[in-house]
Image (tube, rainbow, N blue to C red; front, top):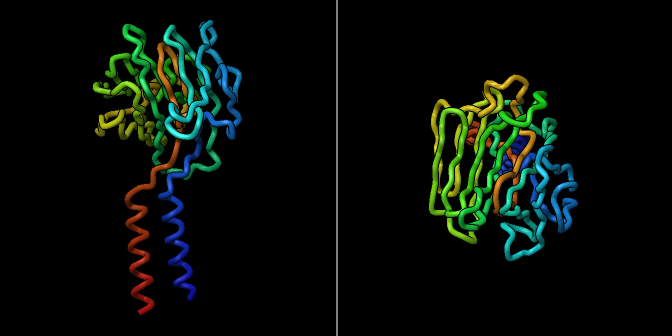
Amino acid sequence: MKKLFLLMTIACAAVAFADDQPLFSIGFEESEGYTTGELVGQNGWEQVDWMDNTEVFVINDRREAASGSQYIKSNPSGVNVQLNGIDFSESYIPGTSLLISAYVQAGFERGGQPMSVKFHCLGTSKRRYGVEIAEFNFNQDGSGNAYVTGKSMTFEGLFEGQYYEFGVQIDPATKTVEMIFVGDYCYEGEGMTYKSIDEEGCGSFPDGIRIYNGAGQLDEFSIEMVPEPAFFGLLAIAGLFFVRKQR
């Protein structure tokens, strides 16, 4: 009976780990404390010091949101806002990879600036620039690019009025970028590291996000742990062992 109980415990642990529960997430919903109107001033979002234009708005429209009812939309004339101080250290399991992702819809105002998004790792650096893990630029014609150290990925063919998931998978222990992706475009390879790898004081964990330049919509920003394949292999072996012992 004790062995069967342990087997059930292991199985439950596998289900819980595989359930993709974010360590940190923002859906810009009312339940998270977001109200319609300007984003700056809500839940720690602020303008970057030298920018006067902070026109990023929380919009309530279920038809336009990636999920839920609310999302944010930036003005095409140029914006620069950020959220810093994200901290999930108490829930993080050491040695686990992290997936940082969000959903974007490019603005498609012809001739406008790209909507740009950076995932920060400010750490103790107190810097404004050179503190990113990755940078993404979404042009108004459905093309764009993504940057980490050691790789620049270009993409095209994003359709107007459609959301695309984008992001990076990282190993905080080594500041390694294991994968970058935008929609169906994906690159996995050795030699990719944080863009801040050589900047003194920059952290290992994602602790901020910045949105700047032109128009677009953003929703469902999240940071979650990625279970290693070996973890599930060990669970399977343990399960087989206990089942055989019961026979």
